Length: 168
Image 1: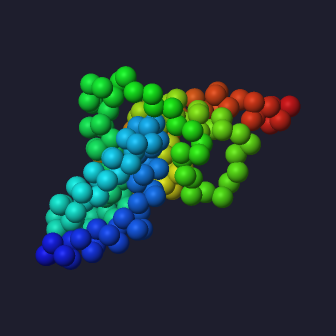
Image 2: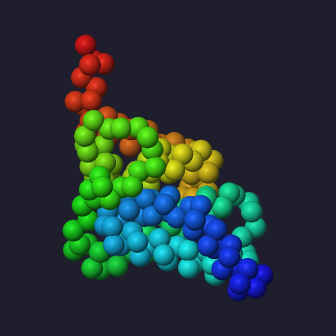
């Protein structure tokens, strides 16, 4: 594959999945500028590795796997711990039409531990199957399901005022 062909293909991938990758990075890093940088790094890495993509998974799954690793690399840097990483709902750029009653859901998600936040982001925002999640996160199916269950429990506790009507 020539550089021109890889560039064209990468441009197509950016157009199709750019928003999804940026949203994923934003939820993982909780900083808009870091998410922008990480998303760019994801597509640079994809451009470099495009000729080795075998098609064992979907393009989106492959890109999200790269994004998960890239975000993990960003989180390992020493200065990352000292940044203000609060994500506002305006930063989320949700691609969903569901309207939340307030910003408590986005706050609750960003307060989850990173592994649970990744699972929630992939399952509910990126709408990946459990099988696709296992490919992105490089974990077993049981681990992916366990993370989703644990995240759901924590989110339900954080958002208990949303469920007040159900308890009556």
